[in-house]
View 1 (cartoon, helix red, strand yellow):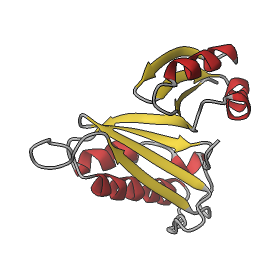
View 2 (view 1 turned 120 degrees about the vertical axis):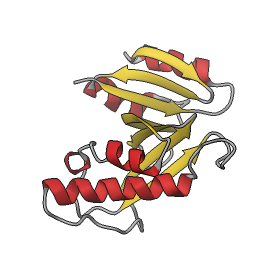
View 3 (view 1 turned 90 degrees about the horizontal axis):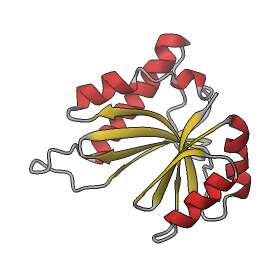
View 4 (view 1 turned 180 degrees about the vertical axis):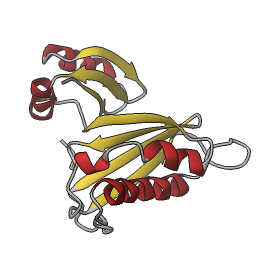
Length: 165
């Protein structure tokens, strides 16, 4: 099974990071601002965590969803089977990073509102599929769900490195 991943890096290092990713077997490599997107097998994913020197963090992309309204974020995010990604008893940190300014003029939802909808979606996933309430604490998080909000789209991802590489 292949994974869609992204690796963050410092300004100006994207080309070097892209070359590193290709060197360990990553495919469909494309660069963005301070980020490199790529596809990797399970073996290459493990290698990325061990061998990428230019990457700050590595994220597994779970879903790219529209983020025009809170109810849309919730309904699309709850389709992600979070209950298959991590155990209900693990503390989860949720962070949403907005690439642009939120506000009425931009049409972008505030990051804190999107984060609360992600939290609700995670709760819903566990309650619907496993009939349990997941750990609500983010203290000493063992799982990090990250949302990248840009142009009314939300890329939901799982921080597979949790701490900086």
